[in-house]
Length: 441
Image (cartoon, rainbow, N blue to C red):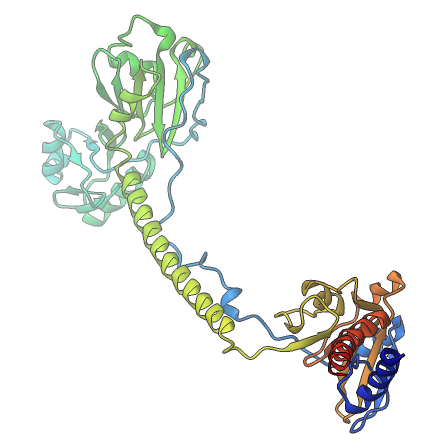
């Protein structure tokens, strides 16, 4: 009886003294601000999300890349590859050059021209210098500027002209000089257009391109023929204008390849192209120079990108350090009540966060003490009022609203305890006091 009386006294007396446990709750009876409790529904979520808020943006340094530079400077465009992967000899394929256009011969630098005139006394007197050269078969060499020098006439530019066009040009020059324009032009030496032949031939040589088209078989004959016993592994390679063509020797009969000035022919007996590569070494010097220039430009670009990347990483690291030290102004919401981790939740950069994000990223509810039917989102309004959005999580379907309800800076998320949790905590405060009071009586 004495114990029961003491229990009633303490139970009734302690609340009056203000020492018994009081569970926090949300009430619309506020002392300094009006509180509106609004159930969380789809319509309420839409209204709540309508409040203006622009998330803080992530610094631009996190959006930049170091993959762009000032470009390749001075590298120039690379030519088409001269060499391709060489298959085994028994798999060698034919790659013929395109047919040459059917155009008349054009005079070029280095060609030697002969002017033939009538053998008359008058002509000898008037064209003594011209006939002297013609009679001695000395001719006139087309010089570097594309012109020939004719005594008593002067310089006549003939490079790039056909024989017919050259005769017309000389005719006009003789008429202007007052000389007998009766003559004809012959090419005594063809030196401006040549094709070289090397490799597995008996006599490597240079074949001039003349008025008569020169075909590949004739050029090989001029070089003494192919000097190899095993024709199965022999390939004729033709280098023209930066492109490499090839004709297996056993497929040469029946082909009609016309040569052009500047062609290089190499008879290759090694399918690894070692000898061919040595032969074309001088001709690909320019290609190597361009590749070297391009490599230098690539190295420069790589260094520039490396410096950019280092600067970006340093700026990002500085921002991360400031963020960890709290030197960056952030927007937060606050979690309290029966949640796994009370504290503040930073709103993310560049996107909206939801009520579900804050709850579950912080560990969610404490299942054995929290009341899922009493989840509140407290939001202050500009007019001083407080809106308490009440989410009844006892019906799990309602949690979908939490995934759509956007957070705003300084929102407070509160989860109330279960009634039994509040009663247990009150008992934990009362029982020690009862024991102490009974021991003193």
